Picture 1 (tube, rainbow, N blue to C red):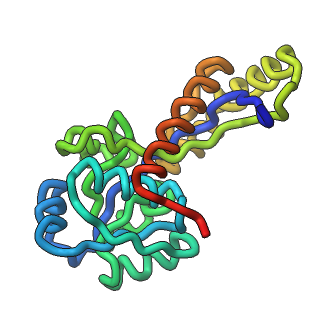
Picture 2 (cartoon, helix red, strand yellow; picture 1 turned 45 degrees about the vertical axis):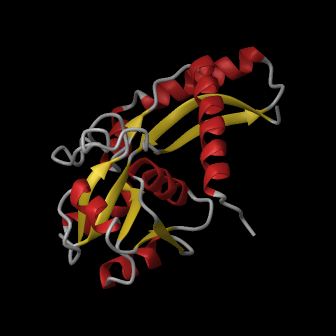
Length: 209
C-alpha cells in the first residue's frame, strides 16, 4: 500500500554461466557435475536476484549448491573466471561482455523465450529445468494513494517513452525486453512475483543479517 505500480519498463533475462575451464557444455552436464561434486555459485549479494535464482535452480534440479555472495557482480566475475566459483546466474547485461570474449560459457537463459542477444542459448525449460525462471525486471512505481488519473497519465507517458526507437534499442541492446503491461497487469505481476519470491526465500532459508 506504500507504493502504486505504474508500469513495467524492461525484463532482463538472467543467464546461467560457467567458467570456460569447467567441463560442462550443457545444463544436463552441469547438473551431473553438481550431483557428483560440490559446486559453488556466485551472486551479487545475499537476497539478490542472483541468489534467489541459484536457489531456485538448485531446488528444480535436486542439487545442493554452495552460495558464495559478493558485493556486486564485478568481483564475482573475477572469481568465476579464476575458478574460485564454478557458476553464476547473472543478468545478460552484466555477463554479455565476458560471454562475447569467450571467457564465460552461457548454458541457459531464465526467461520463457530465448534472448535475442543469445539466440543459440536454450531456456532453462528447453534444457529440462522448468520452474526455475527468475528474471530481473525494472518497473515504474509511484506513491501509494496517488489518484488513478495521475497513475494512468504516468503509464501513458511511460508507454510513449518505451515506443521511442532509441529507447527500445538501448534496452534490447542490454538483452532486455521492453515492457508492455498496463497498470492492472503490472500490479498483478508485481503481486505474483512478491508471493513467489517470498515462498522461495522462505523455502531456502535466506536471511539478510
